[in-house]
Amino acid sequence: MSSGFQTALGGEGLESSNFLSLFTIFMIVCTVFYLIVVAALGAGLWRSRRSGRQLTVESGAHHEDDPVLRPGLAAWAILILLTLTALTIASFFTDRSNATAARNPQLTIKVTANQWWWDVVYTTHDASKMIRTANEIHLPVGVPAEVTLESNDVIHSLWIPNLAGKQDLIPGRVTDIQLLPQKVGTYRGQCAEFCGIQHAHMALDVTVESKADFERWVAAQQRVAFAPTTPLQVAGYKYVTTRECSACHSIAGTPANGQVAPDLTHFASRRSIAAGTMPMSTGNLYGWVADPQSQKPGNHMPTIGIAPNDLHAVVAYLETLK
Ligand SMILES: [Cu+2]
Image (cartoon, rainbow, N blue to C red; front, side, top):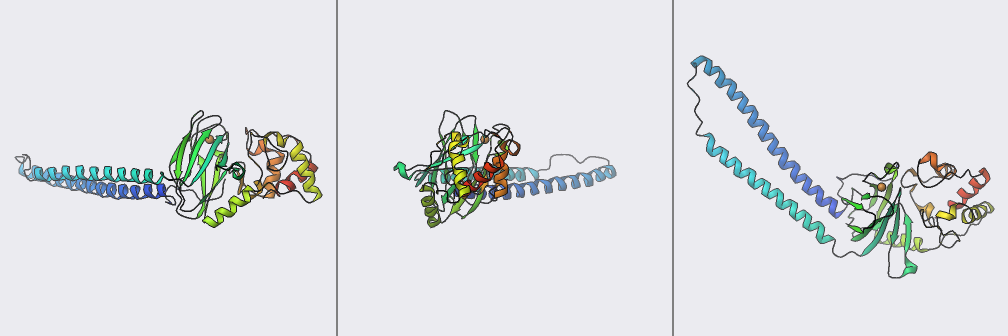
């Protein structure tokens, strides 16, 4: 599970609200035509039953083509043609509107899919200001963002239905998607292309916030990790930075520099653990660190059989990583 509400009918992004309008137009037109067809069918049945009764009474002599019907049919054909043309034009302009919005991104984010988590990098010209996080995207409201998409293993697909349509992440290729969020809120994104046993546990939290809140978040993310203070946190710091954890995870400002697992520098500031598998909480953190294989079987974080004392320390330290 992941926090945030997920719906393709929310219209909280430019693309999704364009899609929602188009969907509404199609829905209304199709409903009207469906009702007309059903009414015509009902009327036809009713008339044929009546004329059937008349036939038995008058014993036949009734069935030439009804001349009144022909101009009616022609009018219907024209109406249907015009309606279909109008729907095609509506569809075209929706597409155009989505494409125009994509032209001037003010923010570039690189998302790399992995089995089964999302690596998220906010790219800037100044490398010291770069941010790396995982399984979450923060976006300032009203600011067009370009998300470039890559994959480290198999084909995945990024889908944040509240904001936009889907886009595949394909190994060896760079694709992209444009996001223009229009409403502050927390939304759920997910992988929308079956990518292995934990495909269903490959979600991400998308936070759309005011520009000021976004700037605050960026500033917090640009800091290196907080130093541990209590003896328990210090013991956890030592474990995390010298034992198994640091082989895969990195924490800025510490010796932990692994590159194949989510960056943990500000891990505790995130809303969920293990790509939206569970909400961030002390209890879940204990369960996850102690035995990630029973929480999310098949994922690449091994169950190392951590001793209880070390587990206390590691969790205490991880919780300082705000
Ligand atoms: Cu996936």
